[in-house]
Length: 449
Image 1 (cartoon, rainbow, N blue to C red):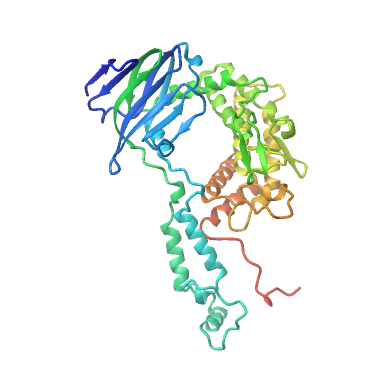
Image 2 (spheres, rainbow, N blue to C red; image 1 turned 180 degrees about the vertical axis):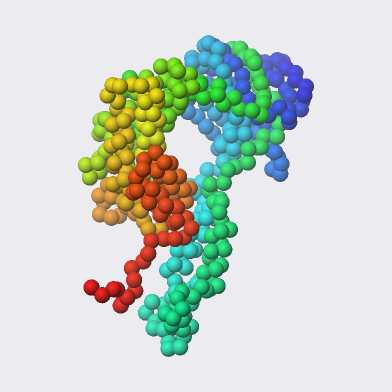
């Protein structure tokens, strides 16, 4: 690989790579800036769809413009204001990830996955009689079966020899086995960037230690993430979300500055791991401060909601609440991590983490049945809390969210020996294989009372 610099283009300094195909797509460099500046990385993507993109990192907050929005193969990211980089700081970017995010085409509705289409087809077959499952036609519920028809013959055979396995049943099982990997859960390829062509600097400042590699410096990035959480924790012990969030077709609104129990829990998980790795007390103290918002009601800017007098830690603390399931469980994981770290630190004082975690697990085991549809799980309970006379339809969990629910419950079952959590995880796992809850027996088939 040959590397050379060009500073002839006005106030821009450009570093060219003549052959960077073997250097990797992890970009790291040290920066010291005195005014608004930008870094432009020109990359070429891998085959078969080889294209050239300009990834521009600008000194501003919370900006992402994709290549479809710029319509010029330009992807823009914000890296924070220049005022925060007066001293030397290090930037590390995974160019594969930045390109993947930047070339994603925005859609108003998520495309159906192969798994989701299969589930819909299975549901329609579930609603049909066995005669019509092969050709996909719906049974006429009002039409009586003719004597001697195939349907009545099958019923008679079933009465004598048990359930007859039809070709449709066998085909259905084969199809289920064929879709063990869901399209909407597939991991995208990591080799997106074939080579880095150049890195260009504009503005007023210095750069140093520019490197490209295939290996992500995970430990260094982890430590810096934990340090960022310590520096940016506010006086309430949280990390406020600076953007507006609308839910339920805009009927529920969170103004900028809201807190999320899920974000609080995930921050606690990072901070407690940093404490266990380094022994530095500042990480554990920050994680402990993050529990304060779990006792503050949503109406007062916290993350605590209540349903049937049971506490719930809200991912989106709207009023009325939404009671998102996966976000609540992520918050429980953070509380559990903090409780475990405090156990190892032999802290004997009253601990919010232990109290909040125990109360949350009790709420979960009592409210889990509300999320069970018999064929899948619900994402949240907005259809219950909005009180709009049933006009709000239940918000069913997408296939990848349902899988997330199952994994979360299985993980909790290894922490807490709880039959409700374990049995719910097993039942929801069976839903993925088409083993749904039993239907009401046909008329006349009820047992004697």
